[in-house]
Length: 121
Image (cartoon, rainbow, N blue to C red; front, top):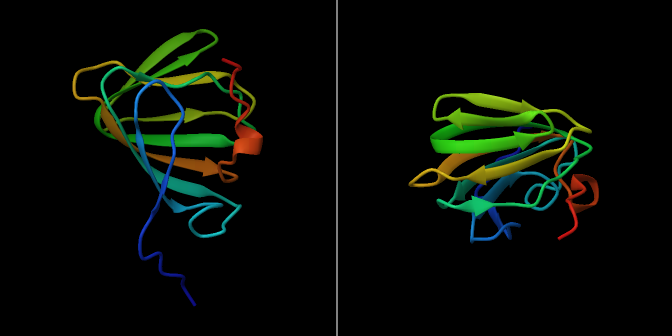
């Protein structure tokens, strides 16, 4: 039988400014470890610490621009575009453009604090 997810759980975000993370599927909201799906809304000027996660992260930008810094440079991912950050590769996400960004992030396996491996402050 399919499992209905009636609402997301609001998760505290890392970074220099408040960012909204609503997890629909994942360790916290659905006790799912195979994958996580979350809606993100981050303000203009938000930046989080770099990370070298053990999971692949598939991100679809719905509004605004999401910047993805990586070892070779950076990518600006605009509304209607997507990006894949591969497990084991260093990335840092930010939203430098006016209006911030709204996006959906899917992690396989599911995001966890134990496997994200954020840079030390």
